[in-house]
Length: 131
Image (spheres, rainbow, N blue to C red):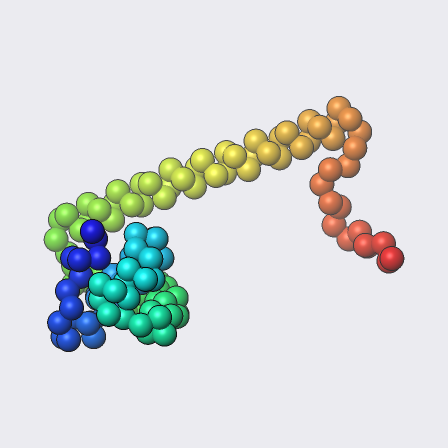
């Protein structure tokens, strides 16, 4: 069971890593709230509080770019840079795919409008009928 990996001593319980792992385990549905409560002795109220904390701070490194850049400067080993390059390539590939998909949808809508003479796309500046 993945939950048993999380330790129970007081030092690690206050660490950000422990909090993040507990919430990610709960959110990924690896363990239910009852299992977390029984194994780690964390109450429902504390789990909800940790969940709100996680939701509030999960994007913090991306929103405050300066702190994110500082953490990137600390990690300069080759494996980390290679992982970042791989992630960048995957993101660019996904971006290309999404652009092609959007272009295919636009082409399909244009062809349908031409063949069936039905306006599919909403024209800008049109007013909604009052009812």
